[in-house]
Image 1 (tube, rainbow, N blue to C red):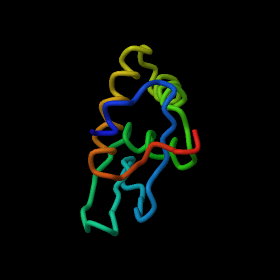
Image 2: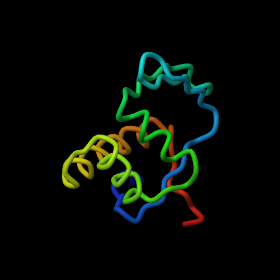
Image 3: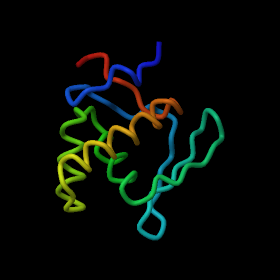
Image 4: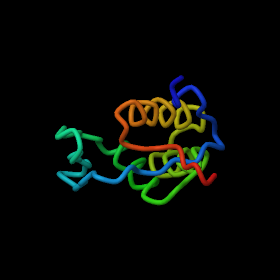
Length: 99
C-alpha cells in the first residue's frame, strides 16, 4: 500500500535526511545523496520544501502557499497535495510517525 493514499490535511510531513538543497535564480534545486538524482523543485516546490524542514501538517503547508502566492485555498490545496505525493513517491519526504 502506498503511503501517498493516506494523505489528508492533518497528515504531518517532514523532509527525509540525505538531501542537499540550494536556491538558484529564485528556484530551489536539490540533490538526493542516496539516489544521486537532481531535482528542480521550482519556486512553489521550494516553498513547500522549506515548509517541511520541520514536521508540518499539510494544512499548514497549504496556508503558506496560499498566502505566499495569493491563490485560492482550493488551488493551493490541490497543488500542495499533488506535489507532496510526488515527493513521497521519490522518498524525499516522509509522513511523520510521531504525529
